[in-house]
Length: 264
Image 1 (cartoon, rainbow, N blue to C red):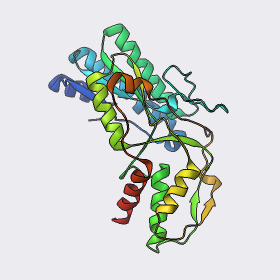
Image 2: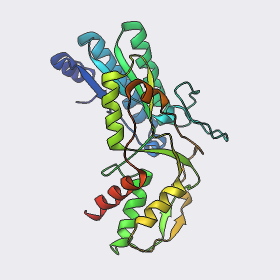
Image 3: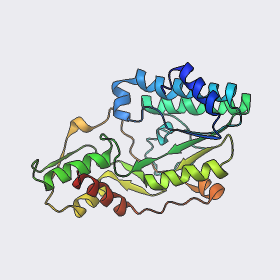
Image 4: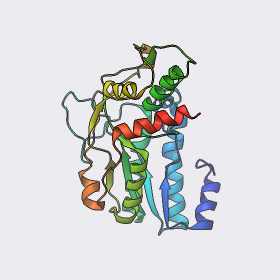
């Protein structure tokens, strides 16, 4: 269905009356959000509003897991602080704005209509089959192209100094499931590893796993208009409430991504 089509959304919710919904539909690429903010705002904010209205009107006992983003925080502080759910929200790009708006709508519907909803702020996902345009995919694809002799070194990269919090998609999915079972209604939860890794460190890990000599060249065209320096989350709340803990090590995740491209 098209989440911007209220008739389609209403029909699905009315017909099925689902016990649980994990709301992942939307536009999730920050670069694309800068290029087309209208599409991003419509899908991520208005689309969420349509789902909330349909639940309110046709399936009030549905539990909704609304998937937001760490981009809602928008921290670009020089201080290396770990972001918890009480941290100020000041998004620095249209994608973050769209997800924060969705979060606020969810909380309003919980308060006004007693909708059974939880909002999640996942930090960086990694894993095979992720869309191109995300850093691990861009690195891995170029490295494998060099390994296969399809392109020449060097690999072209953007800003390598940023520090991010990476979690394997399998651990992210596990967190969503545990939140549906044990999360507190109306609350916001970070889903993250709690470990900061610079993009330089990430690239070094990839190069070490490669079967070829890899040179690196910084490409200014890959820089974003606004780049956060340090975004690392605190996962204490989700651990305390659900018992969740990430299990996949970073090197194992990166090797799986490389092997995915090697088999294409």
